[in-house]
Length: 360
Ligand code: DP6
Image 1 (cartoon, helix red, strand yellow):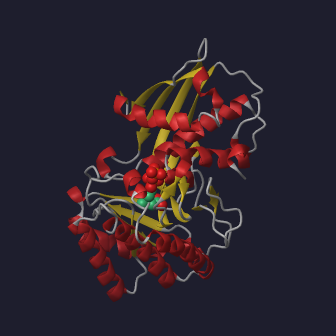
Image 2: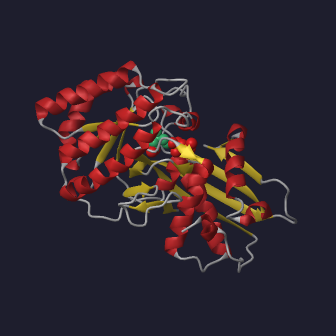
Image 3: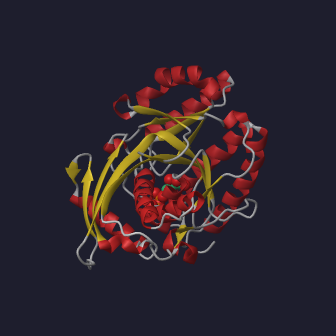
């Protein structure tokens, strides 16, 4: 498929007003997206587990305007209060997606959004937030053109979400989503995420993700700035190749259920992501001392308990602890006994693999 496949055909219905709500989850990448080209296209393919508990709920109420507005007409409410400072980001998103959903200037929208996780938790809300909003707009498009199929609906929702935030295109469905063209993955595309199309061993069903909140403050360097620093990065080409290779390796791992190999790939991806940050120009470090304390404790525990617990990181100091459901009891005990002390205000979030966004 190409971008032009997402331009709409004429709308059949005239809808004056309505409202629609979606709850959309966050996701955690196993092979990381870090580096992008024009139009939010990734430099390399990535794959993620869709999460369940960490989610954004968005309600869009829409009323047809008397005449087309020159600008986008919308109010933005976050957790019950009007939030002016979020509007520029939404405005940029709307201008990027307008050619694909040209009804945007025909309506006034009230966008009401809230997160299941604390706003200041340092957890990225762009994946869940942008995917929830993209789904609401797709739902309106479906009201205008009921002929849209379920498959196209999800593809276009992912396509639109990507234009808001790259990783958001992996939050529409679950439980394992791949985004970015990869030779060994049929149907993969830079334009949208797809459900991982091959066999996945029982070992990866119901995988758990406990997010340890090491630092809840604002990041010093945003993901967008970090992605841009991959242009002219001395190790960029090698890194992008590595992501392709790691996806090939994961394909056999998902089939065989080999958790030892899984751990090697996932932890190496997390550390490589941060190595890219440390070797950018300008360079920066998002990990905190407690991030490293936790990693060392996980390695120590894995060694002595023979468990298959592992970690990954996103673009921040928080640590995602990944483990299979049958290790839940021992790992939760370990987290309480040895890791919680490294969390800000002892806070952590218990999450697990989820199956994608839901219409409310
Ligand atoms: C480290 O999707 O937040 O979490 O496209 O600029 O919005 P933008 O970036 P974003 O980047 C996420 C990067 C990551 C890795 C990943 O999720 O694959």
